Amino acid sequence: MTHSKQCGIQVVLSAVLVLGLSGSLALASDNIDPDDSGAQYAWSENTGWLNAEPGGDGGPGMFVEDDGVSGYLWSENTGWVSLSCLNNRTCLSRDYRVTNDGAGNLAGYAWSENVGWISFSCSNTNACSTKNYGVTIDPATGDFNGRAWSENTGWISFRNQSGSISYGVETAWRPLVLSWDLDLNGEGNVWDGSMICRYLDPAITDSEQVGAGLVDPSGGRPDPKKITEYLSVAEARGMLDADGNGTSDHFDCKIITAFLFGITSDSLFANGLGSGATRTTADALLAFLRDFLPGMGGAVSTPEAVTVSTPSNVQSLASALTSETTASIVLEQPLISQTIEPVKVTKPSSAKKKSRHKRSKRTQTRRR
Image 1 (cartoon, rainbow, N blue to C red):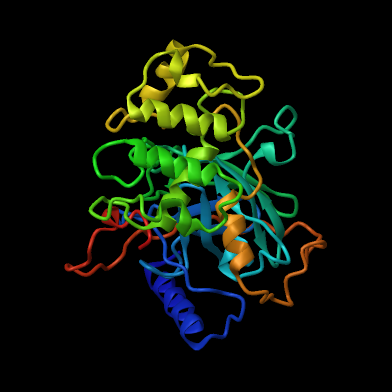
Image 2 (image 1 turned 90 degrees about the horizontal axis):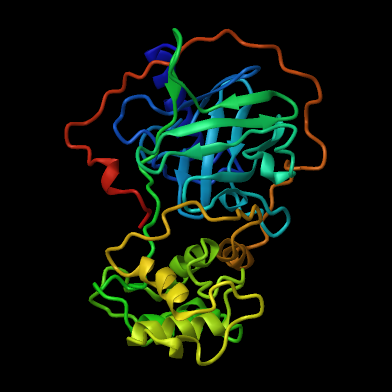
């Protein structure tokens, strides 16, 4: 792709968004290609290049977060690929998303109106023993690796640094380092433990109630809603399962709070352990709990099990969205059934003209 052609496409995309001609598209910022090196392209063996930053910085591209991926990919040959139903508020009628386990292992599905479903992991259908594939993000560099699969168009590769044609996708996202310091005031204490107990209490359904009156307003995460989102990621990554039985409940709440109160003896589990607990001694519990003390950097490792279903906080958000749907999205039957003819491989130009005053996206790894 020539530089002039690429610029022309970006102008067209911007015009479409401004004029509202693309009814189902919602404007979404991106955190792709933070160094402006052209690290924004994936390759489909049958449909050509897919651009993860099609509208330039801040446009409707791919946005990676701790629990999933939103936004869009753009293909000149097949059009938009939606990475989440949240893009166009269709989750109430059709729930899908590319998920992130918090450590950079992607799963779930993307949707294209012209090519149908695109799977980001063989774990979606428990097919890894016969067709092992998936897309991951390197937690240290932000580089995408691996392949996604489309029944209609075949493999989509997110990185190739060998041979005459090299390409790849890079994000500014890095894994969230979990700790008991929920409000980021520099310490994990009983106030943080109390917020965990509220979060695990099934009677509390309002996200703002979790941190109300407990959050330190001078901390780095003073918004109660952000506390709830953070705890949703922590729960998905196993931090709230203190006794190791695979479930986060009131037993774990009491163990964690006792630890944050300073208890290090068998009194940690004086209120009991959950059924099937695997950490049944003070030493075992302390070894787990101390990993999440502020500054320890625990829980960056990949969790033992990855759940492909939509994360709980995304489901809550979807329930709050309106029931607007896009009539053109009919997911049961892909709109094409034949294989698209292969297109000629032309490496996209990575040249971009950037303002000298442009702020680095590495300082914007999370949306305000």
